[in-house]
Image 1 (cartoon, helix red, strand yellow):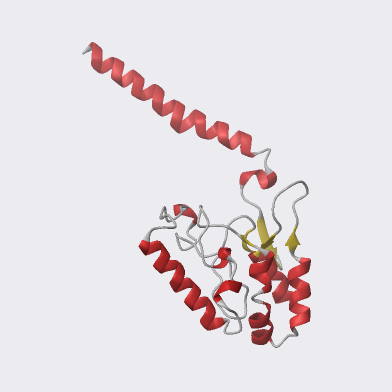
Image 2 (cartoon, helix red, strand yellow):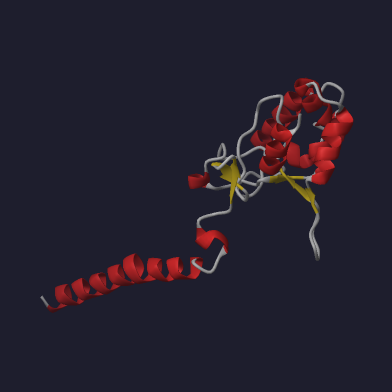
Length: 184
């Protein structure tokens, strides 16, 4: 009986600690984060269209595409594929992505496709692509939207985010597509 009461006390303490105190502490810390930890949203005409730091699926020809996702852009199941570069299944998947990309971009050679356009990120939710990944899509997007390539290229260049200290330049796909919808 003594052991049962000890176990019940331990269970109650654990529940209070991990189901009440810990979540409240994290919630309190989040109040000091941008947007109080609710995520940095992007809005158009007062309507939220997505989150700045979570990748979304864009697969229509008139939009810029982001990185492939191992979790089909499901933020609840953020994960990579866990397949290494010598895994036959992984290599077949990457080859399929390359083939699909080349069908829609017939003006490109396989060697011109940046790796971020055919490989998923570690989280499967990367919202950014490389500037090269955006620039190789300019011709397709301009043609689909009946815009000049120069105008679309200028839009991409205006949306390149350069790190202040160190890192590589990126393009946020959602922000770029929102700006693209604003072009006339």
